[in-house]
Image (cartoon, rainbow, N blue to C red; front, side, top):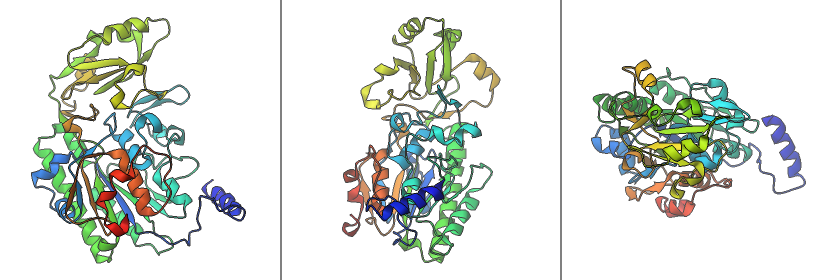
Length: 414
């Protein structure tokens, strides 16, 4: 499908200057490597456990924080970063979703995760770059193992949590070792140890500190490998996170079955953001009236009444009734707690994206970026127009604002 698209577009080039695909021989931009450290809260850098990252920040650009989009969950925000669209627009509205045509989506459902129809409401950057004649590579990124609009990145790997941070770095370096005509110009790299430790033990646990050290050592391996290849000063690096992390004691559990009979609703998701749809033959209006009243440790809204600042609720995949836990709380059931005894997350995200605990890391380094600059916090939708500018390719319609981030760049790169 990808080859057919390129062939048709190149044939059209003979008749129109507006063809979106350039030949592979087109001038390649400075390579761009997008690195996600899942769950790296903005203030983790102050712990002094990430010397490599700290050096990149001191000789590049660091944001005071980056605000995730709502909900502050992994898949929605990773897809926001590469589409520039908020979750309500790109369709990955939660880590767990229901679609009337496609059924159920969850992180562990590999069939759904690799089904491009779930992702087709957005256009990821690797697709746009490919249409402009640039090669792309993803070392794990939500959406990259799906056939979106008929194609994948040129090089990609299905997610495998057993692949170590060093092995992930080595794959990036191997792709950069390819001959020039095969070498990717846009690459992504994903680390998840910090997020896993934060969930399992809470953000203040020593296990999180150990994960910070481990991830930074992998970054040091990357920097060393880039320097050995003469690439360190000739590649733009964006090191960022999808969201932060909040501590959630076990006893901070809202038992939703005490508020509503779960037989009266379709339960789409539980956790920080719980979602419910009507069930035929049951009085959903009564359920909404009950839950939309003030509740201890959570707020509930019909999707049409979600606070406007969250920019959420219009996508058909958003459940009809939403309940958002207060920071530091979860929405669950007694049965879930009993069946997961000893395995309930003590750290969570997904909360109001304005919460300080949800603030995410952002560091940029490379020839396009200024040296030793700290910039104010900004929303993560602005990363997408920054990246299309760095790659010199046209952006797809998006929710970001390039003007908000162009001050990071040296004048020649603006």
